[in-house]
Image (tube, rainbow, N blue to C red; front, side, top):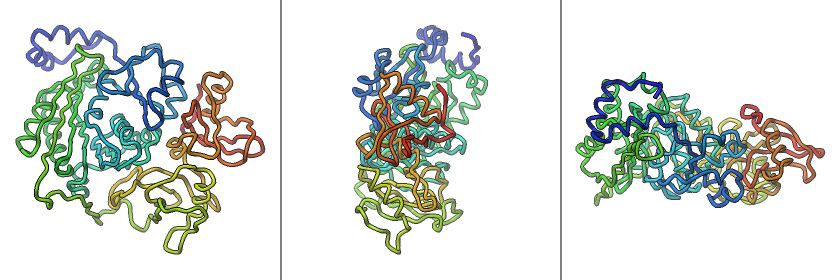
Length: 466
């Protein structure tokens, strides 16, 4: 162990663990366990294992069906699969909370403290593009990272907001079927992984975190439907922030049942320290308490009504022109008809020249700081529509009329894939226009064929050299 643990922390842990303390202390001498989780929005685990040449070097994470440990010698973050959102590199213990939340397609779900997006992407994977997932983060910089990760994972039904829990409460009274509260904490479970967490630790900070967690949980309660499920998690060992937070919450809210409380100890499992609690809110007989409408506030607007125009997309028919009451989306419609085989469901909304597909029955977002109001379809330019990278990442080869399908087991095609991600063009024969670029069936981005050359539309800010 190359660092010194705080004395107050060590004393408390010795009292908590008794004869297990030495084994706990010894765990700090071990290396971190690394893992990734397969993104089921891109394909199932069996498909990944059949096409991935390094799948045989991994082993399953026991508490989730799609997580896998990988050895130190492997660098999955430097493979094109990572850019394609095929998997999310995630600390293995952090995969348990979303697994226990058990979100279902079609539900309304909130991830209240969502950055950087590991749990949100796991929830979205379970929802399979159906329903509404609001992923919220209070810190602007972290919210941007969250939005970028949700785009990379190809989720269509995710709205990313940058608000405090207190701001969301009056907008979503008793609205959500499930809520994830991965609460800000003192980070004791990350000491082995992040030495900076040690320098920031103090008994006073533990108390501050516990008070903050009480406030966040109270906000979450007001947004959860009767009969709904809440999962609370931290990456700390402090009882005040774990069992204490749950005990105080159920004292204030006796209409909850604690279904499960679990601690993950680094000396017992292959992962860092974690705490997870599953709570069930009892249903009420009085239907007036089960409010599911959303209040559309109009004060201090961040997203203003005159900034957007909308049109239904689920009823779109080939060749149908926009009416005078709808924004002129003719070029978008032409692109959808000519390029996509995938039927879209939801509402198209226009924010300036940017076009988004909002989830079906999406709530009003007026007045909220919104980084991602749904799936970014693309940009309306003069006399043409240019599809977004986000749209490409949510598609599969069968969803488009034209696709370039590379195979990683063929060295020349793997090389072309890497050069494409680096911004290079390549010669190609086929019908001119937009093509989805894929590796092993996983979409990576757009190319546009003209004159026998596939022009590169991989975003400049994401390009990298392998």
